[in-house]
Length: 329
Image (cartoon, one colour):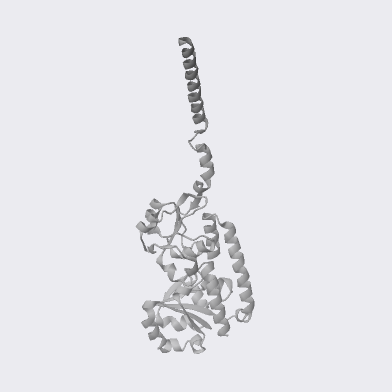
């Protein structure tokens, strides 16, 4: 009997050892887990959320998510591009919340403060996986929070910028589709405005900000991209000379007849702190004697309407500018 008990105990011991060795072999090959899946299979199943790629930015190579999920756009000028690509950022600067054309897209988007004085604490709490900016001063702090892509403002025209952001966000096809749709709308408007465009009439963009006076070209918003690039209109030669290369130019009130005397149309913007200055200028003969003013061909635009330059903003501006030119024929 004792011998039989010994044999049974020995057999049980051998079976136990075999089970242990089998478990060790499984862990070594695939790290078996209690749930029956392996760590390798878990990595494969969640790989899409953690896959990365590299992007060559103006600040060097940046490792970014393959498909960003929580994007913070730290400068107002790029928010419309991101929205046009079908991505709702988790955070954006305060300036974009006043633009009428963005409102329906911004549900749930957090205000991260003024572009020039962002709340880094707020950005951090949003747990972004990608940040986009052109702000040199903020870049160093932002890249400590999450991978940050730096795209200098003014480096690209709006079409190229949209394509570049499409590359960053893995939305290149969406960018192409968006631009194709906009091109079709431009062609339609050019047909409706063909008589104005073919007339060779000149149009200038003039803005009053506090005590400062500015002319604008193609690349600083204010409808310039629509007027000059897309519709093919021209500014007076002297305006093109001083304002088009940089995108804007500061002028004096005394220079108004020289700069705007050849303009058939004026697009006028008055910032909030320039209201008094605007009233003062409009009361003077130097303004009243401008040909466009005498002909009643001045259109005053809202800064909120005309400030940004992206597909969403430009679609909105295209409608306003078309209506203006048709009404002022």
